Length: 408
Ligand code: PLP
Image 1 (cartoon, helix red, strand yellow):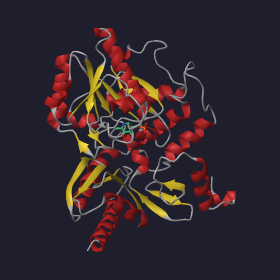
Image 2 (cartoon, rainbow, N blue to C red; image 1 turned 90 degrees about the vertical axis):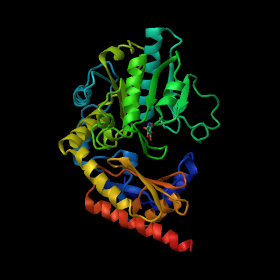
Image 3 (spheres, rainbow, N blue to C red; image 1 turned 180 degrees about the vertical axis):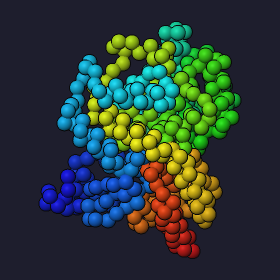
């Protein structure tokens, strides 16, 4: 839809949104009318360099041509059916994902939080069936983020965060341990524990990657104690961190992995993958979804994953990530530049306000975001070039310098 064709203005759209939509989002002063590759276009024609990619979603570029073609093609054949008939896109996508990441089985969902719900449910049922009902607890990391439905919220170790505050009791059966502290996870595990669940890089928590020793230690501990290792790769999956899945950077394999975001190229889809043995936990009727595995979303995801793999965008993520980080480290008042591949956080000292940097960048036509008071986060499309990184760096530098000038 375009404003001109509708005879409407940007102000009309903002007015309708403000009048009718429940207000949970901070808004940029733009109406994203079109998007292509690295750019988002405002309805008034302004062009924004997009280093946020719809929160790590548009990894093969916004409106990637192959994804668009796959959607148009599929939408004319079958938009939706229920999950009793086999569908062609589901079958091809299931094979592509399982064979690419070396997993036996997949279950399709619609989003990251739903994928995590499925992962949590599977682990709990697995524990109950194997060891009796008392063994359903899951240890997760403080400052993690797993989504906004009740199971995922409860797995999120941030009791003071607005995403948990005021919603009443969380789902029981979760304990929280310190990220990157193996001893803390061991201490939080009891004879009721069935699984450990973490993000390989805490994204919303401030861009903290798991240490190699910690990740390998968790895998060993889970093997020794008969626990499942659950990895939430909703944000890190599908090439963002320089490997197809982030766990591959650690030379380990989870028992169940969740994924979403980048896999769909902008269409809503998520999934869990696991082993043959664990997959049997979900028997007929024990889990299901109306839309999960929707043919249009699966066709889009197949095209997106082929693009990511055929163009070796994991390698580009690795190379551009290193290059961009080397630039970002030279910014004034930087405490730390963190992340892997193209999931990057820059922590400033107290002099610099991250939200102001975000807004300053937006004013200069660069889209990034902020976490807390001192961290900016960037997750650009994986097609990003050195020139794009250089441009983004110059805008961030100008914004930071302006802040320094203004505060004297
Ligand atoms: N898990 C992680 C690690 C995430 O970063 C997110 C979203 O940012 C989610 C889960 C939730 O995904 P969704 O917003 O698709 O439900």
